[in-house]
Length: 401
Image 1 (cartoon, rainbow, N blue to C red):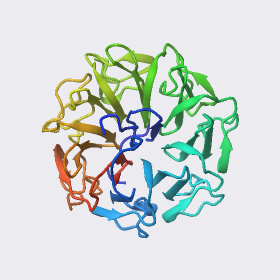
Image 2: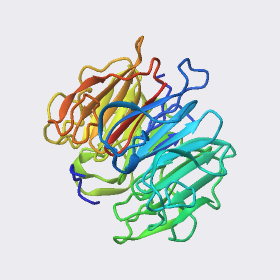
Image 3: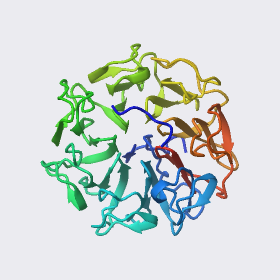
Image 4: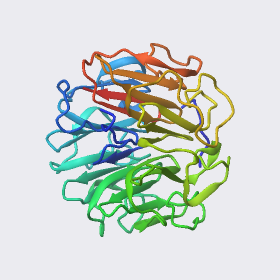
């Protein structure tokens, strides 16, 4: 895994990228059907390299600004210098970095404001990977576009695609998630398929491929059944199981103990149980940390805590299993995770967004840039009245009503 460099409604979630058709979290969330809210407008804050905030500029914003031209937003997904939005119409908008065709519009020109992905009108979920994108259609098929260096588009080749292409042989999909250079699909039967880079066990198939080597067609993650939700970011993934205890499994790179199995470092190329974690409602995989929303409305965190991304009130040594709750959070109904910051949507009259962790690009939304990390959740002020969706990019944050 490349080194991390800082320089550069409860069932309402979905969480680099991830998406789902069930109440779950990845790097983004989805508004539940029939939920009260506003006009589906979106705001963003943090790093704005290549137009990641969609406000028509490339200026970093430590406070929320309006993403131009969006309404009827149903779900959001953030990644490296870009964002995706699923609209109530079933169409998809993208903005930000497009150097490898990850906007899907047959160009490699960056977009400072959202533009439509051509040919999509029946989408049900979106997922932004490192430099590739996935769209789930209501037919259960998956579309992919962008960088394909490691086969992360799942089309049997390693050629980049600047236009939409269907992932062949993949059907009956009900959720998608995207890591740095790999992709996941949750099937109706509760099994999970994976494709792309596998040098750190990202695919969970029981073997680790040589460096720079991936799988260009979907393969089944071993030993996973009865999966309810998936989340992936960077080089590890999470699966929420639909069992009596609602437990979680993890696989891939284990830097900082991000797999939560009591071990720090190394990797696991098969899913392992996250220790001591039950009654989980939603999951969110971050850079080298992970979050889980529990049935009591509180949030557990584990993994690297160098920048306070576990929200424990102190930046400290990593935690290789879930221990304490994120401090001061209750009544949480959605979570999201970036490279080094966490987000939570809290039930209240104003639907409060809380953030914590690193703030090198203003991603905490407190009006500051390059400030010291904040290991305790703070409140973000937005212009939205009834927030229903949150998402975290690498160094940016998103919300919509």
